[in-house]
Length: 260
Image (cartoon, rainbow, N blue to C red; front, side, top):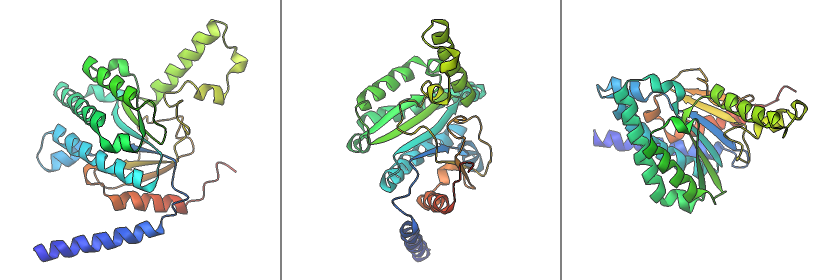
């Protein structure tokens, strides 16, 4: 059994190196979004509580970010918790909030984050989150605000429609105050009021969704207008480095026309 396991590991490593050789390091996507789907189903298949799946998923996020750093992907946006997720059971929501707190504390101390100069922002209706979590978010953002080599966005209490509504409200306030006119409003101006406005590139090059689902689920609706969409038929805790490399290879083989 041990010999078979070692053989499988050896084959996996050879395949991973072969995949990496096929990736053009000059043409990796600049901004990718990930819909982290399947944590609860992964746990259910193992007769675990849902939050145990979320914990396993959080561990996979740490590995995923290191894979992205190694590939030179400069911006990652993770769909962690939607506005609709507040409708889940109180116990599950509470466990998720605790998990986000634990991971933000880890980020504050993370050598990987600080060594690689990763700026971290949490995007969404942050006012809906518990006070302790909001305070930690402020600490993390303050500790990484001077970084500009890599960008990590964590979408919490996030909804794509809510983002667009919030941007429209801000613009409406400025129009009412006489700071803007309706004629001033175009796509470039509107993008300046989105949660992601601080990024060097707001548009998503590609979106990965795990668990085989093919819905966008209200994720970065504006920024995903021309994104390439990849569905990976594994639950998020099972996502592997070779799955990411396959996605990047497929992305590089697509011809993006942007309507031309």
